[in-house]
Length: 127
Image (tube, rainbow, N blue to C red; front, side, top):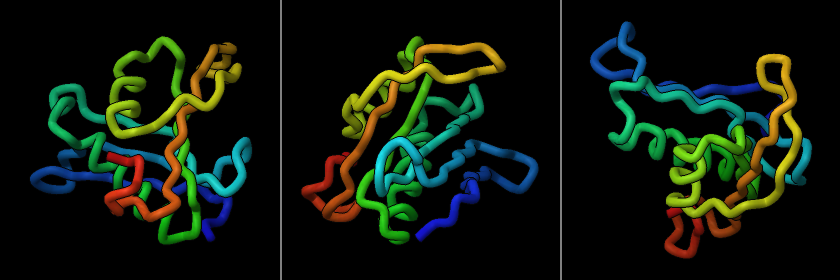
């Protein structure tokens, strides 16, 4: 199992100086046995090219390998691009929470995938 330490994955394009995207993840305290994507960033000029999808799928693989049957993500409720990406990948709404962002309280949405058959199985909801 993953420790409570945060982890991150990076996708670099054409060398170490060009960062395409980054994702941070850790165990999620609000949902039992759940790995949690706490940060996903893709360089603006590279969005829409599948980098976010690749990073989310990689977290699912890592989470599954470490014994997590669920994966969750939390994002500011007004972030429609994030909601569309995660829904396209099969995440379902779980709950709304009040979260802190830059020191201010904001309404955030939590979406969850079940990885019960493994992240790459044909029956998995991570499409």
